[in-house]
Picture (cartoon, rainbow, N blue to C red):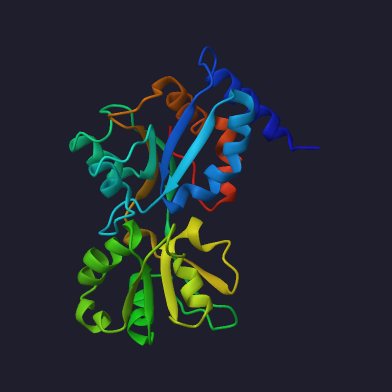
Length: 260
């Protein structure tokens, strides 16, 4: 039997979609919220009758697969689900509908090592700094968390130059892979990405989130695009993903429900 929360979620989807005729909803989504979305999407489709057409890409960065780059060159979408600050930037650029942003979850940046390797202490800023300097190789994502590490945190800690020669930026899905996969193969000693992207990759051990005072305060949000063709159905999806019944799935993915 499906768990009780799934029945409640299906009911929430049905209520969210009242009055909307069946439609294709085009979704662009980044990796950090994808595990939640992939678990909830079938319930939404069954209850609503809508079909989700999904494209994946990073929230930011110079990859041609990045969501801002896709929208800027005219690829169509009704909903974007990505880093909250990236959603704000899309609205400023006229690529997302102003005022449509809804926060879905809060996220922490974490660290992994290869399974069986010792876990370094990263419990405070000094310990993390020592672990970074001691590591032979470091991997981070080409999206929000990696951009924060390479352009903000390493500079703030005064070790950017020491880390430059042993750091590697990893292209994420759809054509790439999670940072943890690189660490699992032994191609990097330690790796950093958002916790939701690290927890369920085989072959690594999660060390934990970086210290709270070094966290960038990431969140994931959904927004309507400025050229959405099916606003009513797209809005129903956003209400569904932000409903209280979605919280168990969000928590299980290593994310935190937003403060409402």
